Image (tube, rainbow, N blue to C red; front, side):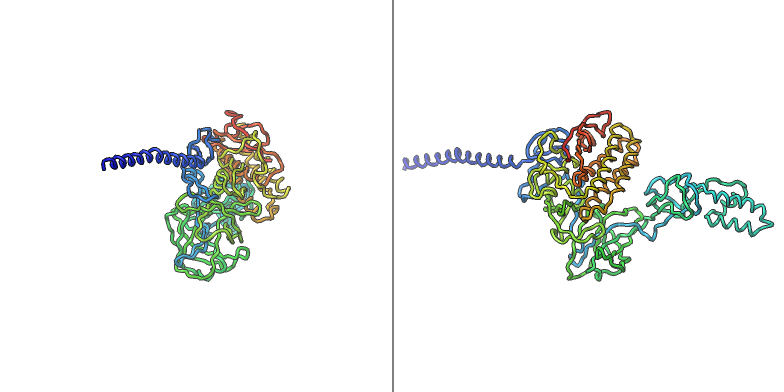
Amino acid sequence: MKKYAIYIGILVIGLLLGWVIFGNSSNKETEHNHNEVAEANQMWTCSMHPQIMKQESGDCPICGMELIPAESSADGLMADQFKLTDNAMALANIQTSLVGNGKMSDNTIKLSGKIVENEESNAVQVSYFSGRIERLNVSFTGEEIRKGQLLATIYSPELYAAQQELITAASLKESQPALYKAVRNKLKLWKLSESQINKIETSGKVLENFPVYATVSGTVSEKLVEQGDYIKQGQPLLKIAKLNTVWANFDVYENQIDLFKKGQEVAITTNTYPNKEFKGKVSFIDPVLDARTRTVKLRVVLNNTDDTFKPGMFVEGKIKGVSSTKEQVLNIPSTAILWTGERSVVYVKSNPDEPVFEMREVKLGNTIGENYEVLNGLENGDEIVTNGTFTIDAAAQLQGKKSMMNKQGGKTMTGHEGHLGMQTTNANEKTDHSKMNERIKVSAKFQKQLKDVFEKYTNLKDALVDDDPKKAKEAATTVISSLGKIDMKLLSDKNTHNHWMKLENEIKVSANSVASETEIAAQRNHFKHLSSHLISAVEIFGINQKVYRQFCPMADDNKGAYWLSKEEIVQNPYFGMAMHNCGSVTNIIE
């Protein structure tokens, strides 16, 4: 028995030693294999520029800092899905919205709409006499004015003569009272007050420049004249909006009209105040159907005394207690759509709790105001990107996923990486131009008109290089003028037309901002945005000219910024003479 006990003891010790030696080795091998897989899937990012995402370590192409391992959180994603960090989402101002215009849920119907001015409260300030505007006291659109406020002073020859008539008639009022009364009434028709007329009569002096006072209070929505302009009697000077109330206009589809009636309560939400709900009632349903969009307008009047709503703001309305068995129609805002050739794509947020996205091709129908009808590709409840779509598309391309210009996925050099803060292939490296952006085919005449915009843009760039804000202001004005000469009829395809309209609007806004500034630092900040959108336009539509896209890593507080140039030699518009040749050519747009 003692001998057996010894044998058993030796066996147990042997098993323990085997487990320690071989089991531990096996665990290490498994751990080693796991680490190899993890390292193979490891992405690298920049702590200062989280939109940069690369498959290998190295330096950030924007600031030159050493890349750090990105958080490993892509496990379980599908092949065409990709993820952004929360920091990158915030920096790029990515916004998403649920699809479901007309979505029925718990007898609640949802509608998409837009805030507009209350036309019933709008007014037009006119001139009651002809003349020349000597001074205009309204500086900009959006300015608040009060009733009785001095708006302008006008030199009017006919008013000058009428004052002389009054002084002459005043001396004859005893002998010719009818003439005296007629002259006074004539001045009253020109909206001169009794006190003004009496002052002219008693002083015996003729006023050369006459004041024009505001007849209403409100916000200037449009300036119709400039200082120095000659105006006619009755000519509008300003459009004035009273924004203490506004309209929320919603598009209602033809097959939904019978679901709505005046007095229905509407709960309204907006992206600006996502956690707040505003109440209103249906005040008007347009009796005429829009034959183009097959919709009617439904209106809700909203109280806006605290300036909560801004005209142009998108809103969503919910009406409860509505039941219908009719098929509902989906629509999405135009800001969510990217077009390339005949394809229309959107980016869907795949995971409601995490910033995971994937590209989805959609088939579009009619235009409904600022929205498009979706015939295929999306379902009720899908969450899509509605702001920052170009940034999302650039991130997809960098991570080798399916994107607007890359149907199959895989790493390519893209034209969008640069102007969204992402470095592209160096111009000195060999580039496969077959993998460049798929260009939308447009007429040579359109390209020529776009080329003229580019020419005016280079004049603006040169002014900033020369540190000349006055010259930059003038050049920005010529950019706006060239944009206005582009013939939209040359873009017969609806998607191409709308794609250009989005870019054209952004370019125009940025150029207007440059033209309105006198400080060169502010002009350069707006020039950055202008360049971003013009780069997109030149890449997508082409101008039949070789263009160099250049980059300065120190611009925009070390975030980096791009610009276009006709020459390969770098001349920096963001620092001018202080850092004249700082920057590099990132790629050539053929």
